[in-house]
Amino acid sequence: MIRAAIVGLGWWGQTIASNLAASEVIRPVLGIDPLEPMRAKGAALGLETSGRFEDALARSDIDAVILCTPQDRHAAQIEAAAKSGRHVFCEKPLCTTGADAERAIAAVRKANVQLGIGHERRFEPAVIELRKRFADGEFGNALVLEGNFSQDKFLNLPPDNWRLSNTDNPVGPLSATGIHLVDLSIAILGKPTHVWARLATLGSHFANGDTLSITIGFENRTTATLNAVLATPFMGRLALLGSKGWMEIRDLTHPESPTGWDVTRVQRDRPPESAYYQPHPAVRDNLEAFGRAALGGSLYPVTHEEMLMNVRTFEAIQRSTASGGIEPV
Image (cartoon, rainbow, N blue to C red):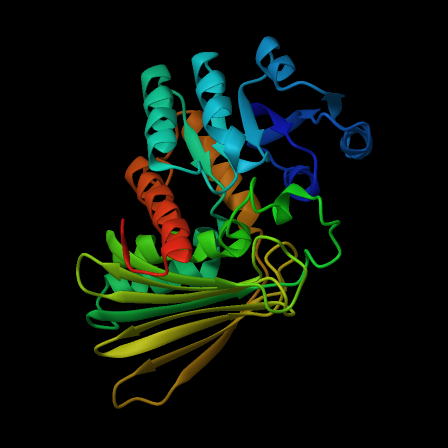
């Protein structure tokens, strides 16, 4: 059993605590947050609480930290946790720059601790099946990946919330939802080489944008076209189009509280096949995969190289929204 401290007890920190309440792999025992109201919510979930990140590293009974903090703090927190011998699970994005990500990954490698990343969408059953069928050749050569992950959960946030800050969190739709699609694109299509992205504020008061469209070119000449909008009701969609067929996954509800997925598969000269996939705790699956790897079990299925490529693509997308042009990854 991994005993963990959750650092950051906001919306997602509380979600993780709830997801791990019955886990037999990771037990959250400590919650860290500088704000007393957030600590009170952590206490209501059964956690001991403290206001300082350093308190988690000072306790000998803490095996791992789960970072649910603003992304500009991730690199330093990963390095400090690794240096103290703790395993680290970090919410996305891992870091804000490729240089920071390189230092963070070097720190966990040097300390020989496990690094996990909050890309739970890889652990959804329909996504797992899409990747398996693609690897088995069912869809032929990959041509295009299409994705949309949109929501309106942030419309009621106060304007001074860090998630809406153009300084602390530029290109808000990217770190909120778009980064998940970037990760899935890398997992399916491989190494990205160039991006073009456009950001606008069209349906909200957000200083850091609410509508993001991204085109990513890959080394194998495939393309991903991705959309992330923070001013429309929830929509989740992923489709892989290949030379022999395609598969589309539609989320019925936000992954925070999944109610299942509708899936359509089409192969050339065959009628479409449709299926419903039952709700599944992908958030918990991801955390438990991290925990099992930390305990010396099966390998964690997101590699350091994929994590680094994701951050470098994140960085290139931000440059593209500022320049208006195609940017190298």
